[in-house]
Image 1 (tube, rainbow, N blue to C red):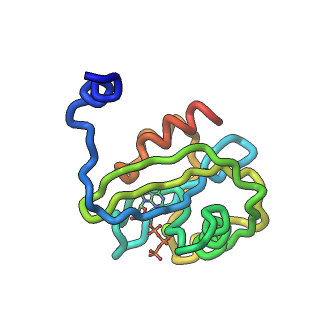
Image 2: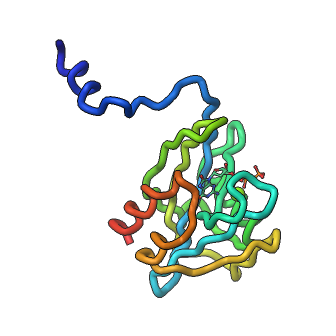
Length: 151
Ligand SMILES: Nc1nc2c([nH]c(=O)n2[C@H]2C[C@H](O)[C@@H](COP(=O)(O)OP(=O)(O)OP(=O)(O)O)O2)c(=O)[nH]1
Ligand SMILES: [Mg+2]
């Protein structure tokens, strides 16, 4: 048995199911001057409705992930930022029932305008330790650890 084979066997049951379409999403931790992070409640009628999420959305074909996020922040929150204001924090990879989510996480401390939910979605500024108490999508749990380490 070679090393690679042994490494696979160290984590039995961890293999993700294959065959699901991959959905690439860019999402952001907007961080205010007090170190709080913005979360938005997902609108009714959407996948994972009612849960608190990091703003962002699907990357369109051929679209750079940073520009997708700049676009989504304008569409969802009405704020302006730039790719140069987005610091990569990490990613999550999570199998939902119908697709496999790969979500790139950025941090952003510089934007213009005051975030307002453009679809009427409620917003909250939350300290990182308090994010653990919120009802968030299952894919987001590893993001909280990332933010705890980075912010
Ligand atoms: N934005 C965002 N999406 C998340 C998070 N966690 C999580 O599992 N997701 C999932 C929910 C969705 O299935 C997918 C992102 O889709 P989205 O609904 O935000 O996409 P979008 O803004 O482009 O909206 P739409 O045009 O497709 O309606 O990622 C999160 O923290 N933020
Ligand atoms: Mg979205």
